[in-house]
Image 1 (cartoon, helix red, strand yellow):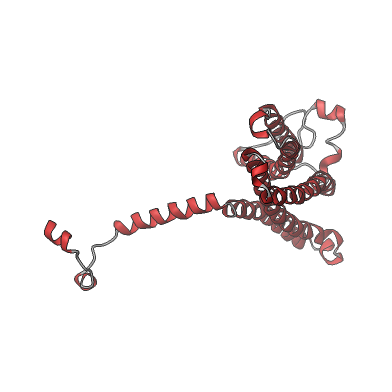
Image 2 (cartoon, helix red, strand yellow):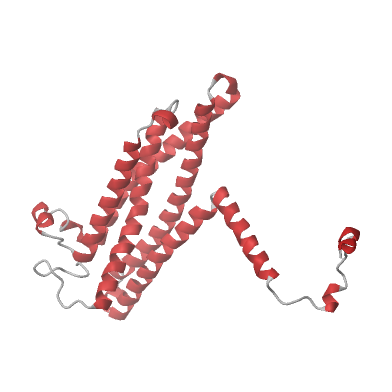
Length: 265
């Protein structure tokens, strides 16, 4: 995969306002897409610490762990996004010779697989481990502290959330990969440039749709967020209805007025 906007002598040649907007959009799209993947790994790592130090994790955990994990996610995602857009970023990356290898989607997919697969495996193991321990604790709740029970429930909630993210991500990325591989292995599409461009456009659309659907699924699977959204939506619809047209006489015939209200008037 060649970079979309190769650097010439450390600068971009012949780039206008439209091209700059496309460059920024490309960087942001890949950055946010990769952030979701690496944030999944960071969340699993944080839950590992929460499981190991479960008895006093909420009171004695160091905020440095969360800060380091979040900064690592931002830096790694940004480096990958810049490399996809520009290729050779500068002389520092040219010396490393590492990012020159990462210009092919299959290499990216391989790296993503080897990063997320262990995280998904650890997440699945910790889910069943915390579930088994929570069942044991609930049988004798008086023998365990409230903070321990709370942390177990918090771990279970987090792992269920990660399962939803994993399912949405695997389905979406799987469909995108199939669309991307069609012109590579189909003899018919290899000769038809229009079909190859069509598959490329379909991949771009599905790539964006995947993360949009993933965000919506993650949002509506959280009961607190979902209930708050429904509450705000009802209030908005109620206010919109209150500013509507005045009710006609035919519609007002069935309205009953309480005696107290009548006396008040």
